[in-house]
Image (cartoon, rainbow, N blue to C red):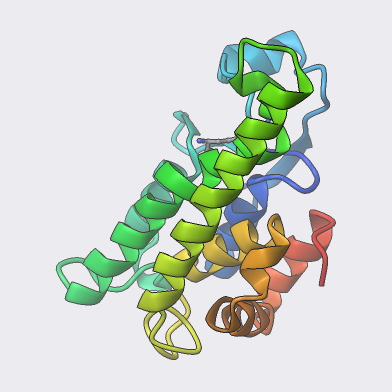
Length: 204
Ligand SMILES: N[C@@H](CCC(=O)N[C@@H](CS)C(=O)NCC(=O)O)C(=O)O
């Protein structure tokens, strides 16, 4: 056993971590987390969220972007991201963080609007959803304008592309933006990504 353990849920952000592990080709164990978030999982991540990855050396990591950067550091030759020090890497990391800091939280506000308002009224909940959709439309357009085509950095697949495809899968208007739709189709041609995508029950 390699010592890597991925805590995952269907249709969640653990998809991109499974894709990264498969792209690297390292063996890993998977533990499916249920909606009750059992006490032993809460010790690993008190925020009760996936993905969580236990590294072979012992540390337990949360936060999807941080996990991907750690994996890239551990397996630089597998090129989840371009080479350290390159301009391409700086851009790929910038967009990865842009998505995890802006689009991912907006998607969560869209799916769970009641968690983001103190008022339990349909008007308040509707306002949260509209504001989340507004932010996603703006941020996906900004991302689309940076896509060199078909992928963010042209023809070179990075984990940032997989992250973008994952987020677009959760918001139909994003996939309708031509640059993003083309990126998703291209990303899914990668066998490792397609396997993680199917395993997580994502739409083709
Ligand atoms: N900022 C976190 C967000 C993780 C997150 O919100 N994950 C969702 C699934 S996509 C989750 O576990 N939600 C469980 C819940 O909120 O009940 C990351 O990037 O990893």
